[in-house]
Image 1 (cartoon, one colour):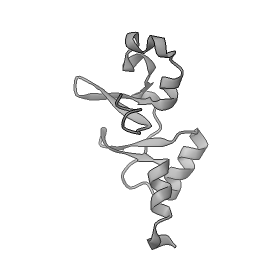
Image 2 (spheres, rainbow, N blue to C red):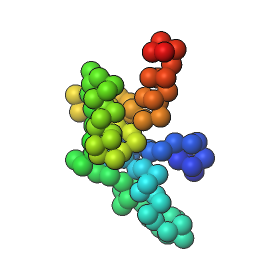
Image 3 (cartoon, rainbow, N blue to C red):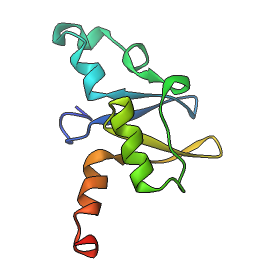
Image 4 (spheres, rainbow, N blue to C red):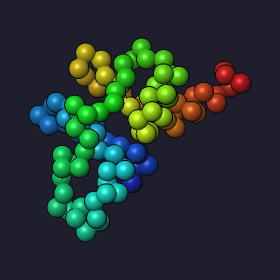
Length: 102
């Protein structure tokens, strides 16, 4: 409901107030719908130690290259071990298409 109903592509997964992973639409598609009620986010998510991330000072071109290289559509933005946002390919491309770059 949180992903499909809100048009999101991912959700950050926390356990005991600690970031433990990212649940992506791609990962959800791998779980048969009849198993959704019995499958936890933790079972399907990409664990934090396997996540591709960027820092707040990563330039946008570098972030887009990282997304292309790793085949991901979003990158968690991490600062001092804490998540401060999610940079999505869609948001990045919309920003680059904005009038300030035309």
